[in-house]
Length: 278
Image (cartoon, rainbow, N blue to C red):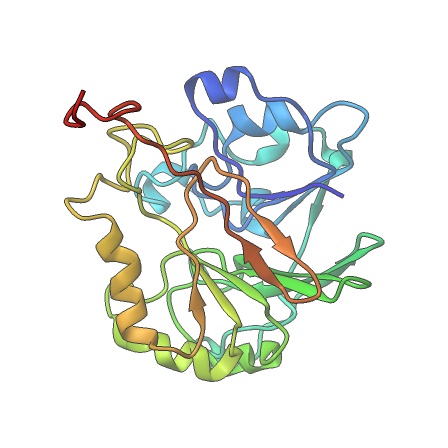
């Protein structure tokens, strides 16, 4: 089973993209998460089955360009301009923020989860809501027989009590934006969820790595490793930070749920080195 979340490809990566995914999940309608050129390439062929989206991808807040302040465009939405409607399914959050409770509890029609056979998916509200009635999604993927889970939080901005429903159930959390403006909120997230491993994203490494093109947000950092280390400083030893590099495949050993780190020692000066006596 091959699953992608918020695929976003550029240049030769987009040109060479193959429809290798069974299911694709979108967290919200911003163009760097719901990217029609990428989805048109991937949402086709015999293997592809379904594109799962939040409601904002289908009925976005109007006018689009003004409402989303450049993060979405009228040419892109609704997404069924680009993908056949029968290949799209809208999902709603099973676990919701209490941010809007003062206005009365929001009721959504569902579905709130999806069964993909070997993988169960639960929807968790994220934080890029343009309006309360347009919730955005994070996703908890749990492999039923291998007992391993991944929580993609989407662009979650704020903690909320219902996240505690995930406590002890998350082996790997894909961290997007939470805490960017205030790292001090990360410990509360750890209190709620208690993830075993933490995968930071939304940053570059010290190479021009795929799939983030040079010059595109996020920017090149003077010291990119400092980003992951800064996260470590704020979450301590309560979880393991995994500094993955974009474009590299990582294998998870089971049942230990540890990453198989693989690297090679490379001598760039040749053999023997130029300073060796002749």
